[in-house]
Length: 242
Image (cartoon, rainbow, N blue to C red):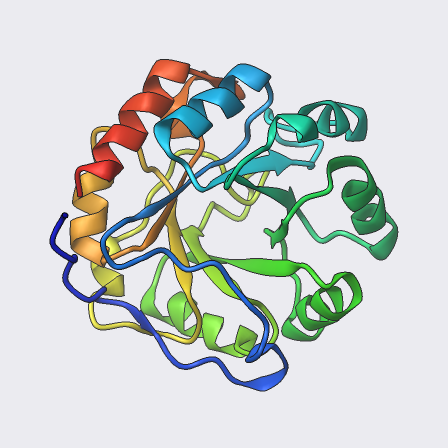
């Protein structure tokens, strides 16, 4: 049996508020969970399963090269099986869009990657009954601190690199932020690390931040939106050895 990893450098405070009693999947201290985001083919989902990933992400945002239509999402949903959990990634969705995505893709989790305020996030959680992840775009320590407003509204925070103001989309651009910002940071919720991760640097990222869940998209692609099954396997292998 592998020895437990050191306690994460950024640790979540105890849950409180309306979501304190709701269940959330937590990675064990001896295993780092993996989300392969922006999948668009059965082969990519199969590679995630074979590699031991815990989550896959379906992107529904037309400006993204990883965008899936509702019909495409519905076609891929049956490929999600076993312990694998699907995450629908949305940007500032209204209720009608959320309902359509849930009907099409039956996601286990909703990931909100826009400018959703805490009250809106809490309302989505209450309305859908689903686990909610809120992306926090990070460039400075002040950005990290902004996540505290979502305690009691979201179930998990996902720290991603902040994109430029004129960027065409809020994430998925292969950028990373300064991981040292997470050293000593007391996260208000369970959290995941995203932004610029790849098979070649994910072990370093885990050692530097103590992340218990890592999220990758462009780092396992041959081109924007085109997943490489060998890179998915290499990413999962690198994580499993941490």
